[in-house]
Length: 248
Length: 158
Image 1 (cartoon, one colour):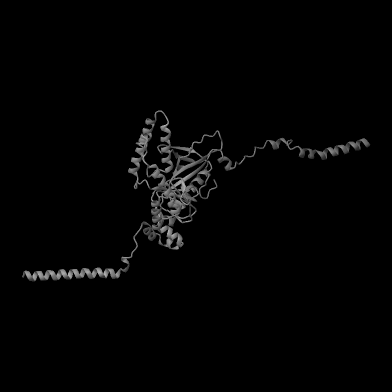
Image 2: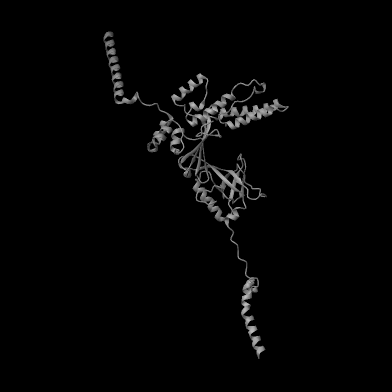
């Protein structure tokens, strides 16, 4: 009896396995592209949202938008595909000049070839940004990150022990102002007292920024995309540098 | 006889030249004409607005109609630039102030076209009342303001 029950169970298990296998195979046959399906990116999600506008766009604009890049003359729809919904939208009274502000903009990684070239150049010790980064937006962001790395070098000055780091929602101009004020404060007799006030204020603001920001990452930058009419006219990184102008 | 003819000729010349002298001297108008009430001067509205400082206003949009800013609703309206025409003028409005309402109608939730219509109606009635709040928005005040907008609202000239 036991033997019979065992045979019954094993045959059912075998049937069950073969059924599973056949369903899986059928699934693969019905969906031949499943293995080669492209990885879903935020841009691809937004392309499906605005499919008709995207398909009408020229090929170069399509490529830029789908890789998260900006270009002069792009329409707001393509900028939305590339960067998503802005944090703030400001407009002039006549509605002609509109500015989309991205508070925590993290630029897309540079293409693989550029990354490889960058690594090689770093290895050689010849850090010439002009020769490596061709994308102006990347270049602008690279310049800021390079400046940031200079700021982050630990100072040997004991008065810099409590110096606060840059907030993610803070512009580089504002952070530079904080640093300049600190440098000026060092030259006065009550330097320690003034520096403590400055550093305490910066620390409170930094802690607040961690609470308020969704992405509290110092490598993100503020990006303002300016439209005149229905086209991108300029993009300003961190209140100061145009994303479309190559950095010196 | 000759002298009487001469006198007649003189009096004729005098009679003829009388209206000509009147034309040559316009201040010698008849008294009845001078008693008329003075014509009411219609002042150019642009001259009236020049009494006030000119402002530039920037609107924060809600983003409900992301791709059509003219059809998007407004969250707030902030004065970003101020041009004082008279050096002795101390305007009641300043940079950073937010315009909350015009003639008692709140701007929040309205499109730029609706705000333009609202301001136009308010100007047609007289000097618009503007409810403004300061930088922090803690207090509001209502002022009479009919200054130029350096960037005019759609459909308006100033």
